Image (cartoon, rainbow over all chains, first blue to last red):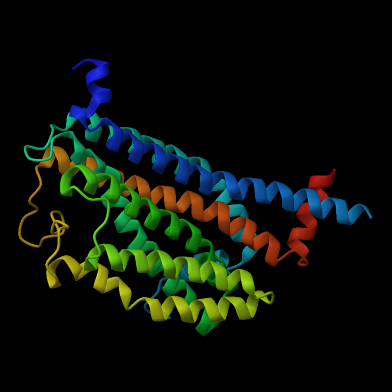
Length: 51
Length: 254
């Protein structure tokens, strides 16, 4: 099986890869958001402390 | 307490204490990530490459490897959210409340993924993006329940009261869970019946079943990782005036 055949998914490439791509984005967001929030928490708390 | 070994009781008490939970989850995180990556790699390789195309649905069926695990997770996480919510309500364990509310966005995400990938699978196979049948509608209601929990929690400033309200909403919503599960048996629908959880013999070939189970397990580990990330932030915010957070902050400053 060639790589382009693999990407084509027997003609269903659009549906399959959109599904996988969207899943990847949503799952990544769920990891990134809390990491950003934690950094924010530390930044704000340290700022308040210095006042 | 006679029936529970001492070590289990001690582990439980340690885990229910926020600073221990915070430190312990940090320690196990790398291991969880390694297991998750291995399971996902194996599951995707098996599902997208090794498994043959379906004799009726061609390659479109490969959406199953994210659609079905996501749908399972949407139900599983809801049960975790409702049960930890109930534990928080009855015994007022702060960590249970934190686990409960931190589960909501992850559960909503999996519900969203299950609905959208189902739609993307339905279009080429059923010829339509959406039908108002029992399975799809009850899963959509699940998404609204999750969003209701998130919205309600955010709308109440006192997080103790917010946790109680959210727990009650989550517990009432449990009635939807068996409806989703049995909807394909109780009502006639376009959605196919269960292929894996049938009691006698799963009607799915083993070369397709193994990657599916690997992905289901991989999503469980993803949930653990995402839950830990969210719950640690939630814990920090709730405990920001407590001694252990202050100590940690002063250590960070140096």
